[in-house]
Length: 220
Image (cartoon, rainbow, N blue to C red; front, side, top):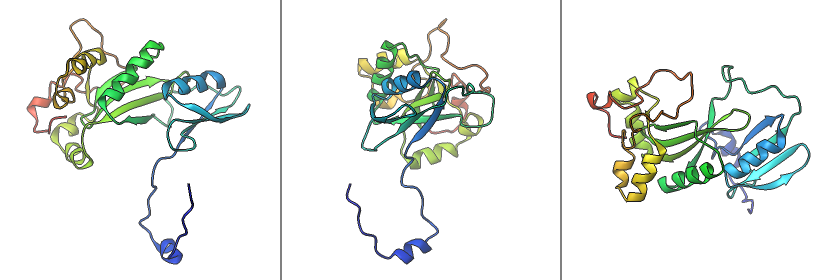
């Protein structure tokens, strides 16, 4: 990338409205360096941009690195109930891309931890070998629509979302059902007797969307 000259430097430095242009990368410390590196290589369809005995820099797009794995022998395990990062998310450009990733990871033995229609995203969560929660998502709304949804009565009572069965959603996607139907709440309910894919200890939420019809929320 060529570095452009910047003019009006004093004016730039005087500005108070400058924001980040993107979230660039995440760095993870681990006591199981090779296992974590290999997981993220598979999880993200990534490649190693650089590696030594201490760190592995992983790349999957135009950025020089998106994930860095740092070797820290003897590091304590992740503490799920401690203060800190809850999860991080990777977006996919299409629902098909999200579901193709689900299929590919399933074939590798990597199973979801949670499957949620958040209203503005269809999200499939996983756990890495250290126990960090990682989200894969597809945006189902433009930003203005998402803003309106987050101001809706339904979001006020259920900001978490509604569960979906990834196998049901995958079957409907392959059947050619309209996208507008696939991203709606309740589009892929779990069949009777099939346990929901959901981590333990989550707060109560409207997991089956039973309360949605009683509100004036826009459809997810």
